[in-house]
Length: 191
Image 1: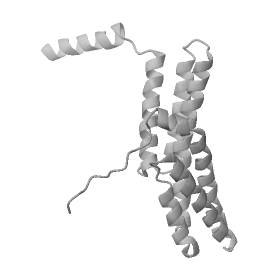
Image 2 (image 1 turned 90 degrees about the vertical axis):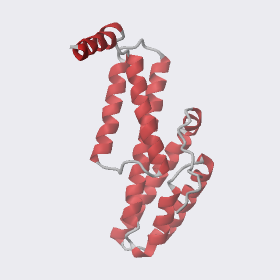
Image 3 (image 1 turned 135 degrees about the vertical axis):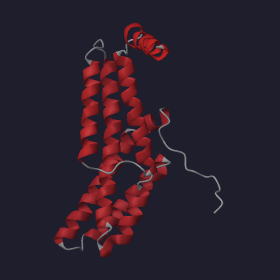
Image 4 (image 1 turned 180 degrees about the vertical axis):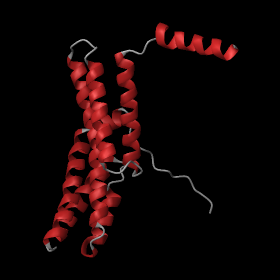
């Protein structure tokens, strides 16, 4: 009986007295975007696929829906654009990694593809941009001599890296401002 009374009190307080606002709901989506992006920057994010893309568009639809309840302001549009761009960076990094894993199966460019894959782990934006540009260029230079099918795989990997580079450049200030960049684990561990 006491549990039932507690459940009723909690329901009334959360639903009727403190209903979630559009800003709070949009903030929850922003938190999930930031969490997923941080995991992706560390190299532990979800692989590119239909589930990730579906989640990306679902988040965009939710933000647009909840934005419709807010007054028309420029900030509403800027918040949507920023959240959309950050989530797109998550998807683009996952796509680049997926294509780099495929490229690593080609013996002629295995070492280059693996080095490029390692360059997509991001702790510092400036050094990551430098490493990613360098590795994309090396991979592109070596892909020229490959047969057609293998060249297409390598070019898809380079294309994913270039997309991630562009979005990383675009979102540089937001990643630093919102403290999304992961901190490398520097703790000594005994084996």
